[in-house]
Image (tube, rainbow, N blue to C red; front, side, top):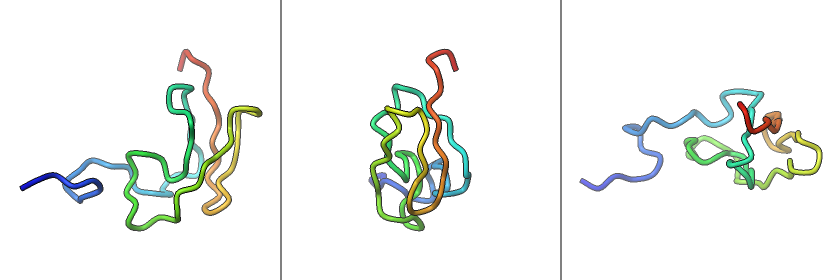
Length: 72
């Protein structure tokens, strides 16, 4: 059987489960829901502009994202 993205056998993050996410520069560009989250129970994918201010909020679910420095 071939593996499919987002199946229950995968160890993915539940979409919109947290309200505060730390993002590393290597994770940019940022979108919500993020890669590695289940998509079946989430809102449409939206780009989150975090680069200029270092923080941003998703207009759909209200999740707050903040940019971590390179040491974390």
